[in-house]
Image (cartoon, rainbow, N blue to C red):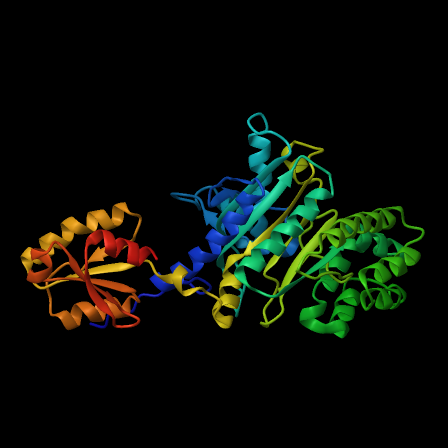
Length: 455
């Protein structure tokens, strides 16, 4: 009888020890920068009530939510007529009350509201957890992936936006990835929609122009037309979304275009303030005003960011922005927030393609004890305690197998040092320490071995 081979769902992945070492290097680097800036860690459940998630990401986002069937006889409460009429929205409410989180921002807003009496504002939090989206899997896009979020809520100061840009600069400097930050402002986009006479179509306009890099100008214009936006309005939009020049030149030009828009002018002033700070900081990472950047999520209200890798063809690897009204949907108005999310999986793909991982960061074991017999094995088990007490990760090969097999294990694990224990070594209470890179070996005490491995 044929046995079906096991498999995993499309858009998900297993991670080997090497891959996990690489991922943990990314997580640890990002986490250390978050902490450097005074952010505190929280976690939220993998699943949330659908009432928490639905309606926060726009129609497209709602379609990509993974819904969880209710336990037990989930069809028992469904009206037969709703099933026969394929009334999906009605049936969904009856068979599913929970879903897997789509991002970390909406659950964070829910967390803030539920814990408002326990936290101090401004509240600076970071969160590193997986999220799920029922998207079509492709290169750089997965159904299960990790986000590394950092947010500040309870403050409207634009200094917070500047701090997030500093964090972005520091993270990618440490990871040695060359990036550019694209920045825009939803208030400017609202002003643009207002100036072309389509203020009520702001969502359709932002969703369409946000795809400019992916589908090109002609397809963006076609999508705008399909949403009922007039030819005249589309024509007026062309010179705006293809605007070039320095950040200051773009702001000066768009300021004239949006002279009659109060909200547009407010967005322009916000951007001028942000640039005045970042220009003084002389960050290594270039920051470019991109008026086509829209960020598809509906909850953004101010500055928005996306980070692109310069040396690899891949989508944005970090994104975020200002959201003024997110907690209000949970009954807590007037709490402004701003945050960014580092896409760990895409960062992983970039670093793997460019081979940016330091070799030391990928080694888990620094010293392996190999032995010739049971007495030597007992000796090694005793001595390894001293090595580990000194903070060195170490292993004992669990049986006195042939030396070729034990050394092969060290090679396969890229273990840099091997401590060989035989009768001579035991008699002198020492080990024969071998440097696996150079082949050099010498008889040393455990204390000397610890010093050499540490060095």
